[in-house]
Length: 317
Image (cartoon, rainbow, N blue to C red; front, side, top):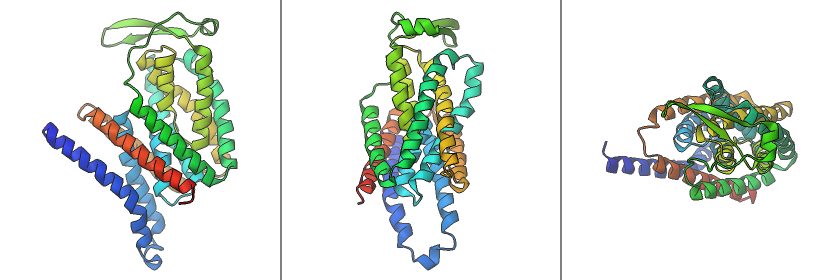
């Protein structure tokens, strides 16, 4: 397939997807109740599986976690209560982080000394965020979710691709915690040392990220990696791997709050997790064959559409 044909297909897919997001709820609700009532539950479950499968593909290709796409889009276009969607979203993000955690630990990329302090403050704040989110009215959380998603979309539009960090002298806190290490770089066949700086600022930001993730049921890979890589000077591979470690601890802490409050329903969580994980495997296979910039723009468009929809629902429109 030529590059021009590929661009046309990607543009058509993005346009069709956006149109489907807007029209699907109205098409379903337009069907007479006596026709859809007997099969409505399994129809929505099937649609959720298919939709999660597509999100899994795009989340891998765009380099963002599935939770950050799952919660705003599903809450905007599916007739489920926001609390159940947030509970499922946490499990979606958690399942992805756990599936990738063991191989990365074995390769020595995920660093415990780096991840555990960030996960400690993040898990405490994620529990606080989950409790705060469940205590708020759903309409207010929907409004705040729209604001958060629009902010994430703006950050993705303005951010550059992560690169080689600026290596500086370690600060006093990182020296006290002995946060440093080395990892094996396969491209150069050598051990590369690393150290961090701006540790107090990083801890503060991970506390905020954990609170946001717990409140909205979203993964935090979109924020963890740039804080590690661009602020604290962690190499990109170590930052990505350790981000999954932090996310698994924070997500597990917040998920227990949603489970305890009865906000996790298997009929929503199971097809969502199955679709996301299957789509992620397909996305990993397609990663070297697609234009990443085009996929990134499609994901940003999806976030903007979902954010606007969340804002409208938050205002009762």
